[in-house]
Length: 177
View 1 (tube, one colour):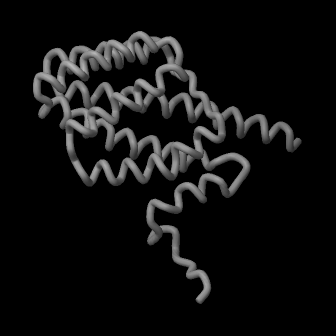
View 2 (spheres, rainbow, N blue to C red; view 1 turned 90 degrees about the vertical axis):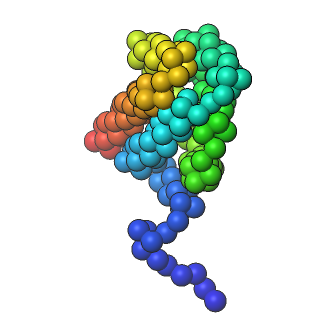
């Protein structure tokens, strides 16, 4: 019996959740790596979905982009719509491997982020550019533009989260003085 200890490099994605809770504050590098990976998967999914969507699916995506636009001023209010949009893209793209990886990433990571109450502040200009590109990508059936827009969204999210954790590190250093 007993637990086996293996090097982290040979572990599975299931260690992400526990790694997030090792310290009071999660490792900013780990958070950035998660966002970077999830962004790549989401951007690829967006491209595939737009390229393969039928007319009915495109209409649904158009409506979802409009709803995202209505929530653009409030990050918190926008999140359920954004998750639903990404889920719809995933259903349309129908890539089982991406589904499985994304499900594990979400299960291991997103819950931890929610528990921590992290609320990124996304720049209005960046979000407006993302939404404009998404709207155009759906209208013109341009998968590459959709991929770029989703990547831009996650880049903005990464920028904001990095800023939050940079500030947390600064304030914890100041408290230690």
